[in-house]
Length: 353
Image 1 (cartoon, one colour):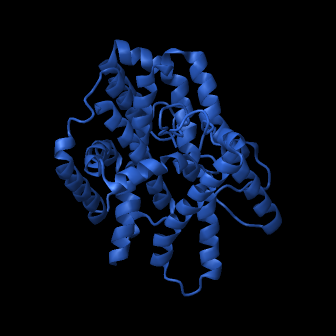
Image 2 (tube, rainbow, N blue to C red):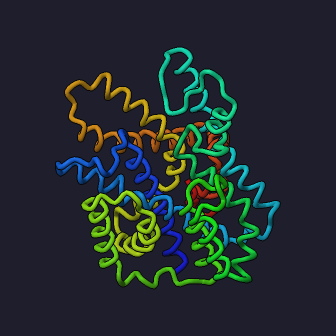
Image 3 (tube, rainbow, N blue to C red):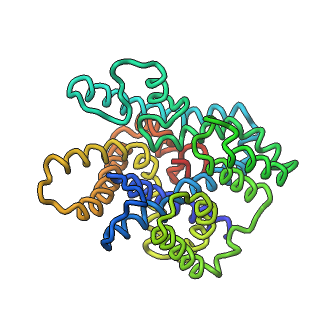
């Protein structure tokens, strides 16, 4: 029963966090120091600079937990084959498609973007295509880029987790929190939370221990987010270490509720939402700036994440019905006839967006 609760919560939080990623990336980006005085400015900063800054740590922790709980790290060959199919292939497909679209837009329309692909520059193209030393052109996929590095390190991390777990934790903190790895992992919080998820799995932590404090955890989370905005805290590293614990425990409030069950049911579409939302946000931003004369920006900001999530969820259902095997291969999922859970990239009810 307890393990089923954990699995249900992972599925629910996977969807909630990826919707949060869409909100987080809704343009334009406004530095927290430039947050305006209006109520809408506070709300926007609350979610984009505080609450949903925890999405990557939460997802990284759940990914680590599920990987090491499955023991996949102890079978390197199977780990490599599975992650090539469920993480590397979707990364390449959805990043290279955006790369091709950006090249055509710059070549034919002369548009300027964060990655300027013309004139040709090999290091720029390598970063844009594969994220060699910087975020790939489909920028949310830097999570997958870093996750692939962590999967390559998983056999070593798994050995350390099972033999010298706390010495390993100290080493991970020392190396990644101080950026001693250079450009190996772009998000320094991510390997720490991935390792913490591994600790939870290999040390058999009781992940429901704080459920009785779900309401205080939610209250503390809201207070911390409000403090980040009120005091205009730009460096939220420590917040991103604390927030996953609070979010995980607060999620107990959604257990066996209609919203919680609905989020679990939508979890299958979350990976497509993650893979494809950035180019849709870009198109929506260009359309808003050129066509939506007089449309209030707050209306755009609230409406467009909902619209994109709805569109991509509909596309997921449509393609899974029309061409399930081909589509499942593109997004690294199991075809519908393999299992009813819709689990994908490498873990039950996949959390790795």
